[in-house]
Length: 338
Image 1 (cartoon, rainbow, N blue to C red):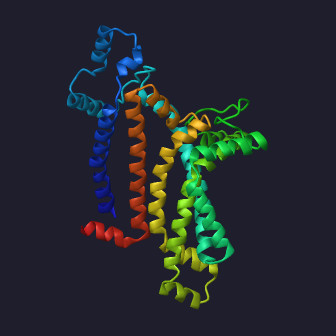
Image 2: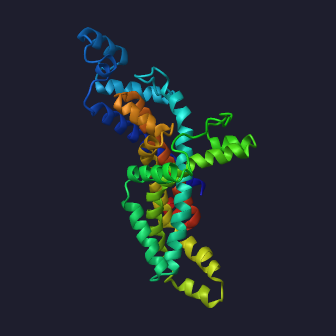
Image 3: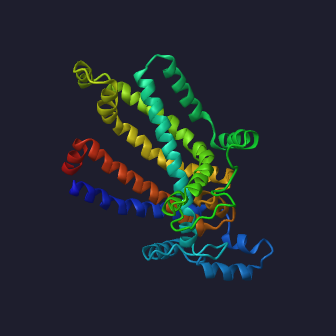
């Protein structure tokens, strides 16, 4: 197992280097002049040239890339062209909000998706099966921006059940120890603040988690139906085991590898979908910050934000690889032999 983990960790370095190169090239190939955006259309050619020299934009692309990688190795993402603040500081301030929203959305997706998938598989051909799969089809089909707006209109404006935007009510005081408000409220033993944070998370979390929940439900049903046909499942039934033991201890565990693959991929979808969700709900996270950086042509901020999201996605897939080996030891042995 140690060799398997070491091999996966070593594969991270070329993957991350490739991500850095792709992000750098894609940002620099986008039309537009950052110096022109910063100074405006009326800026003189001399002023523009001076700013380009200051930002290093007058140098060849490979020199800019080498300097960028060198700064990354030292942990320096540079400064935002627009705000002149350190990008690492701005990301550190906003990343907990995005990660907290993503984790809550994934929790919603797992609970709803796994429950619907298992129920549909064990009740195949019944009304519950048809209702579950129809709901999952609707979940996949609905655009995030439309669902978010409908959530705000119905749940906030009409029913008044949830707040429209923000992470915390104005009257709630919470020490920002880690930036993860749920964790901070628990560490402060403030259950009222915890309930307030959770209250603000419901609508954006449900909006962001709807599509992953639908995808997980469909994959869970498909994988469970395959496993339920196996001989060892019929043997478990013949031994007189309870339905709960057969379904969850035997069937779901063995069906979980393809489901885990979908979960890891959907985590990346959640990080990408957070851009829209955070904009709709005025959520102060990386996604909303990235959108503002793109509009301002702040290429350094965009580089830092995209690199952070991509690195998080790669690390999530690494965890998924390790869970594969834990769920099915044959994967570990085959990887070590290869």
